[in-house]
Image 1 (cartoon, rainbow, N blue to C red):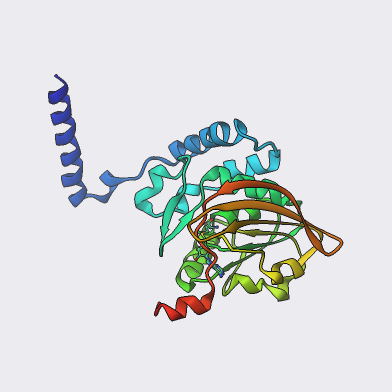
Image 2 (image 1 turned 180 degrees about the vertical axis):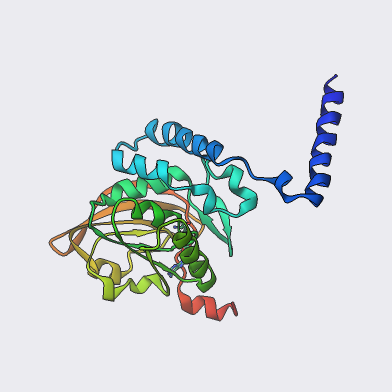
Length: 249
Ligand code: SAH
């Protein structure tokens, strides 16, 4: 009986593939409502059941269509409790980590926020739900271009995307109330400390590439960074552009 069922479902699947050759509608992605349900479940199970308590962060995470920020083939996994590849060897963080970094950044309406490591643009969109002033830098020009187009298409056109080296920050847009770095560095890039306002928050994974790393939340107090919270994590490295050129890419 079970074998029969498997065979039948195989044939049905094949039928869909064959029909798909004639009509693209047959291959349609799951309806938008099912993504919206998956997103609300993600907020309840992965965020509220852990320590995401800021109502504005929970609302933001419940609004941003994460499935539009991952490659189409992975859209059905977008609301899973894990990171996903986004191309060019980069990853979009697990929803919980995005929410935690956002909560630690304590973004109030009107705050100026810098994100280093645009990637897909997802974290930038979440930040843009909280303030109209989001600046984001991405080292890889192709990712920056795609993220800017995607953000615009999804109604986050106010986010300013730049292709460049995040180690230098964004001096023309500084000072910032909060800086969120989504790639791991061995230590805090000095330009970022300089570009942070007094009382501002800096959230950054620190540690060795692909090794032990700690997500740290700092606050700038009397010109210095005071560590306030930390969590073991794993991020892709914050790359020095010199090393990229050296590798011939
Ligand atoms: N925040 C992203 C995920 C970031 S992955 C999202 O929500 O999808 C880390 C990103 O940092 C990658 O896209 C990588 O290309 C970028 N990156 C690495 N080194 C960088 C640097 N020096 N300056 C700016 N971006 C950098």
